[in-house]
Image (cartoon, rainbow, N blue to C red; front, top):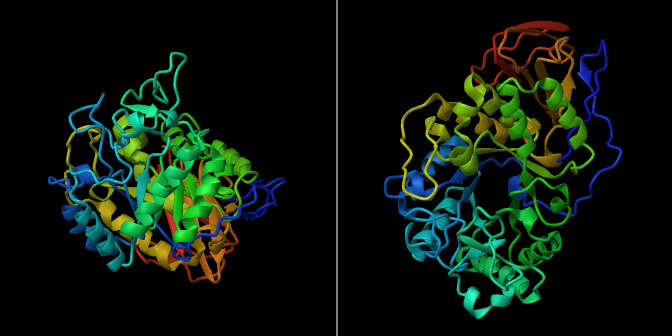
Length: 448
């Protein structure tokens, strides 16, 4: 994704986008349905007391109402038993690439779930774990040449702490062919719409380039990489993780960094990401929740602020299972730990934001959406403000990214009437210069 270079132009209301000095080329053609997509990460194990496909299927109408377009389902494959972590094991220790984990249901249950997702007008991608397998994957016996080995010829985990899995060796051409065919199986047998690929940067980029080309012959897929390396989006992936944003959001909320650092990152990113490449923006996911703490722990009083910011910046926003219920529990990764479902304001907030994403072209993804134009506020070290416009649609967003009250003066973009608050529908103040007194972490988002 292309982000504009931010340079402060004193006395000017908008800080214009400047062409990048060097930019990655991209041959990826996104499926048309992704242009205004949002994404929901489904943790089947913890989504209900039953932890089943059937129970999750009952929840689909709620996701539809909220405006979810893409459902990413965490790994559904059988889990290894050798060196298993916890009672149920890690979803990412795959024992069979073509099998369905009986913990969640049967192959028929999953096929029915996919059909129901499509019937609701949504799309489904599954989590794919290509870098390693469980120790008891059949390949360990039938094709030991598929694996990396230490100096003694023994299988090795890809990372010392990942003791429940062993690393695959992509210098083996037969492995590459087998992996692509296993992925194709899910397109032909279950009619899924794509893949979220685990630790994608640990697998050679040329494999992904070839895999995308082959998979597109079967069905035009949507590919999400758990990685931020921009070269993965040249030929293979539609979207990469916006990890850099997650770190910046955490650090700003904790007083370790400021708007200056966010501006500096956006200025640098322009050089790398193609303007039509998607980035996934989020304040939590399964890794963050279980290993780094909930968004409430990491972001504190700023949690709602960064939730909204991640939905109106350029990128595709993610909602993780339980966010709509305000889940403030770090979910167990290896055992059952069901989400406690209860009413929470975030459900209404996500619904407004996701529905806005569907209808306001300024918020659309890639080249279909509007570029971010940084706005001069007279207080740009503390207040992050920008506008986006596309085909007559517009947003003006103003965020106090500090724990203290701040003042912001916005010139030009609010001169004409016609914008309204995205949440309350109240008319936006207008004039050649509009002054805002912002409370700690307060935000304003006006739309047209």
